[in-house]
Length: 222
Image 1 (tube, helix red, strand yellow):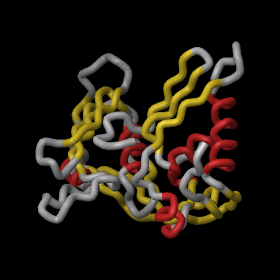
Image 2 (cartoon, one colour):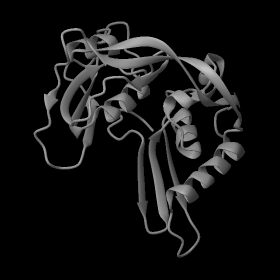
Image 3 (tube, rainbow, N blue to C red):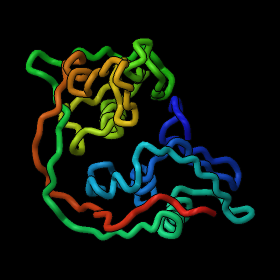
Image 4 (cartoon, rainbow, N blue to C red):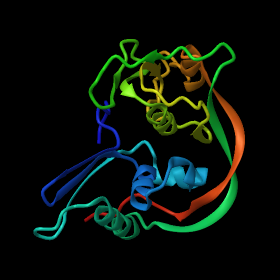
């Protein structure tokens, strides 16, 4: 997929048809194995060989009169990753470095949700041309944590805020897939963007079952 990426990590199902739009190879692994971002370990070398800046659109169809349930389409994705991406994985229980999203000492500066519709996240290039704008409407903190994990911090992010209510959040930040040219502004780091919201990423470690990626490559042709 070519940018700008207005639809990232979107699953659409209709009848026997299912589409995955705006998924890089790591997100495909998370979806295929029903994992959180911090449960997938990929070495930097493998990330580069798989090129996480490439976003795929995958369309598949189940057999006639078969509903594309999440369990069924995840099994289909696992086969695709094995056959086309040459994916090999194994499970381990490991203590891994993480960030915990927490409120800063002065408290968060998040706005209570004004919307009654279900949570929605809108993504698009910001006016400054260096950042992307992320707008959350009536969303809980776990949706913000999910987006932060997609932005490419150097370790996985967990929710440590203990906030349960829904918020409207506006955030401008340079995501991992946006590599500005030398004559462009550098853009806002995720740490700076969170500071403006009264939040921060606190480093720590967590023991958990993870999937370790042993091999993955660019997909072969159909």
